[in-house]
Image (cartoon, rainbow, N blue to C red; front, side):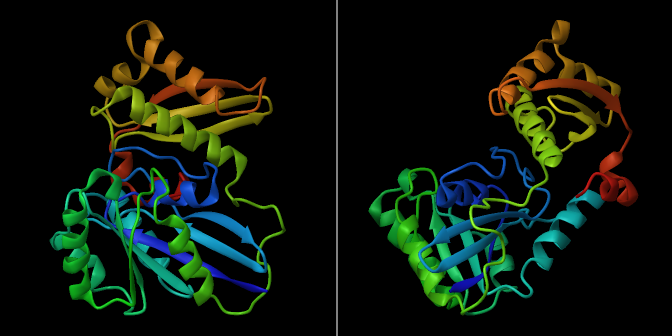
Amino acid sequence: MKSGFVTLVGRPNVGKSTLLNQILGTKVTIVSDKPQTTRTQVRGILEGPGVQIVFVDTPGIHKPRSALGTRLNQTAGASLSGVDVVVFLVDGESGIGRGDDFVAAKLPPNSLLVVNKIDQMGKDAVFGQLARASEWGFDEYFPVSAVTGEGVDALVAAIANRLPEGPRWYPEGTVTDIPEAFWVAELVREQLLAVTRDELPHSIAVQVTEWEWPRVRCEILVERESQKGMVIGKGGSVLKEVGIRVREQLPEGAFVELFVKVEKNWQRKPERIERLGY
């Protein structure tokens, strides 16, 4: 039996969560085109013949502007210790930049480099980004599309080859270790980001305050009264749309109640961030 832990790292919006979902063939982490969508370490478990791979999705590493941003960077940094393989993702479509150089300097030389979003690039552009990434001197390089799955099998095979002999860390059949209540809160946040578009990417937090399945009560935190109106929508239209989208991803019969609360500057309060589980 081979087994081990694999960390996915990179800047915000390079496609780490999309890649993890693609590898597992199911959704275990929320996805958005907004920065800082992933706020915690999310584990996804892949089983294969004689192998168990525990992937760890992490927040994007960025220049923090709040206590929340600092915590997210700390979470990502902590994921680099004690793992068997580090997979560093870059966004090939937008091109490698100084932020990627900053992350690369923090990683071990035996990391695997993934140039993602090749489905949006021509062959010459892919080769150009691979050549640019080769300056970091990592062990192996993989052009991949996390959306279509192109190149993903080769990446997973390379990861499996690097794992040591070890135990099965999770019971067979386990796909993730995310608590159900936290997952529902994340689904609500994902759909809020989708429905409200650009207005509230960093100002929303969600927590489950009551769990009496199939009834779930979720509290949505915003930082200003003006944001509260945006989240509720005219006549409650935004909350209604979010509720419908979330229920579509839950077992039949789930009843999700959504409430909005203003908590000024919550993302600048370390103790509040801690209580939210970030």
